[in-house]
Each structure stands twice: as C-alpha cells, then as structure tokens.
Image (cartoon, rainbow, N blue to C red):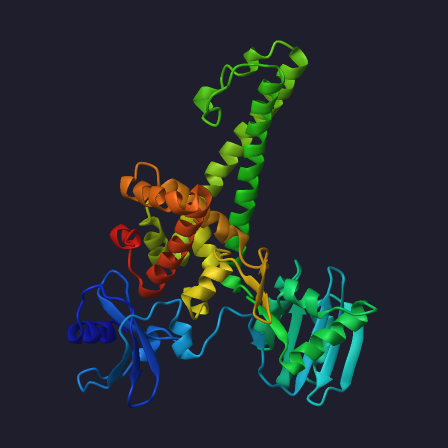
Length: 430
C-alpha cells in the first residue's frame, strides 16, 4: 500500500488541487483524486486505495475526464446515486428467518424456491437452534431483526461458520406492514425478505470490540445521570431564589453548597445529590482509565489520530473509535456522513420535495460526538472561531455549527482511511 502511494506521489504533483475524475484506459475503471494533507492520492470510487495495486502511471493510462469534479457530484460520473439502504442479495440453498425474543425464537426456513421446510417456535438456546437447522446448515443463511438479544446468535453463527446477517429494525418495521402480525408471520416474512434480496442490512458489530463499546456507552449513560443531578441542584437553588451556584461540576466549587439552603429537608435532599455525584465521579474516573487502556490494545493508531483533532480528548476519541470500528465498511464519505446523522435525508416524489425524514436512522452516539467535538474545538481556537462567525453570518449559528460538524465528519473519514493526522489548515480552507 505504501509503495503504491509513493509511486503515485512520485509521478504526480503534491499540490492541493480540486478533485478530479479519471478513467484508466486499460481497464475502463473510474478513479478519483482527493487531497488528504499528504499530497494528491488516487482512489477507486468504490474500493478505496486497495484498488490501486498494480496501477501503472508511468505509461500514462489515465485519461482526465473532468478537472474539477466535486465529491458531491462524483456520483454523476460513477453512476452512483445518493446514500441508500443496503440489502442482502447473496444466493443460498436455504434461508432462515428468526423472530427473536429473550426466551423464545420463532424459526422459519425456506428452500431456494420459497417452500417452507421448517417453521417452529423453540427456546433461545444454542443446542435447540443447532439441532433444528442441522439438516440445512451447510447451505444456510440466518437473519434476524436488530434487537437487544442478537449478540449470542451472531456469535454462535460465527463460531459454527454459518452465514449470519442482521436486519435494520426501522427499515424492517416499514416492510412488515400487514393486517395480522405475530411471531410466526414475522419469522416467515424475514425469511422471504432474505430469499428475495430485500433484507435491509444493519451492521453486525464484531465480537472483539463489542463489549468495550457497550461499556463505553454505559459510561456515557452514567455521565448523563451525573449531569442530571447537578442540574437538579441548580434548579433547586432557583426554586428558593438563591444566587447562582457557579460551576458546581468542579468538586472544589460545591463544598459550601448545602449550607446555602436554610430548610433542613431541602438541605438533606441536596446532600443526597452531592453524595451520589461524588460516587459517580469516582466510578467514572476508574472506568475511563480502564477503557483507555483497553483501547490502546485494540487500535492505538486510530486512537492517536483521533486525538490529533483539537478539542477531542479521551472520551470523544474513544466514542468515535468504537462507534466507527472499521472505516472500510463505508465505501464513500457520503455513506459515513449519513451513518453519523450529519446530513438531512430528503423526501421526494415526482420531482416534488416533501421535507426531510430518517432523522433517527444512523448512529446517535457519533452525532453527539461530532457535535461536542466542534464546540470544544472552538475554545481558544481563533481560526476556527472566525470560520464559525463567517458561516453564522450567512446561515445562523446553529446551522453554522452543523456545517462544521459535517465537515469534521468528512475529515475524520479521510483521516482514518488514509491514516493521516488532523490538518486544521486544510480543514478550515473554504
């Protein structure tokens, strides 16, 4: 990979130029160029840098199709449209749809012509499931809806080398419309979707880092509970017309807070809040250091790259790293921005726009992380502040921060894909 980059950099200018679109005259493939802070790289539009192996630039096989193709308009040349849901289309001999619950699972197995060969409700145990699918497992794909109890089934299929796919819950809810609904019907519908190539895919997070991601999410939940207690103390002071309490999030600023409340019952309530806050702080500090130690063992390079962003510290870097997991699962930067909820999906029909939809589809944790990162980036950062002021004068402050969040998301995509640190000068370039 590095040899390919050096070869390209040696034969092409390293000046930052507008994105260009090329066609390899030898194989007809489309390539695009983009500037990532270390010169001009080429990448296959859908396959990334891996598609460059063996590309010979010395013989001049590249034909320039357009000197200023923007990333947004690249799809017009590559015949790719906007971000759309991915469906499972691989063919199998048998298709297993499962309506999964905590204590039971309704299993429906279809053959290649759509006939039901198994349709049965069984306990959620590995032994019962493997016994039921034993006659078909060599040519079987298993699919279930993304709900809270899918982990064990995915791990079991991986251990038994059975193909497993996870269905996107929100998309499947729209597909599952019908007059009657029960576990038997739902399992059959899931199997039919698998066989028909209409099964909407969610990402089945790999086992290796999944538990750490969940532990990090639990940490964030506890941090929000701590913030609720701090807000409750501030609101209580307002109820009794007390002066502002200041920054009580700092332990040194809240020693005298209970004494401000003359009513002993109210004072006791505030002391309870402060006691729980102190416990949360001790727990969170230990947990954060433990998480960072685990993260260094999982992916130290990407963790260091994310920390190169101004304002991104221990928590935000961990959230980004574990929620993204593997940047190569996003073929295009548009797919990544959509997954992070950094874009507004439009609703259109017959050439008419009907607003936006799909706000809940995507990763809420990444949306929060990029929003926080932009706000923290602005602290003491005059060039970034000037950029926000310029955008705010045109769009308003809220939309200016949203634009910067989207830009940061795109920057993180290319940082992780090309393994380069954050470049603020390039990031703020208009």
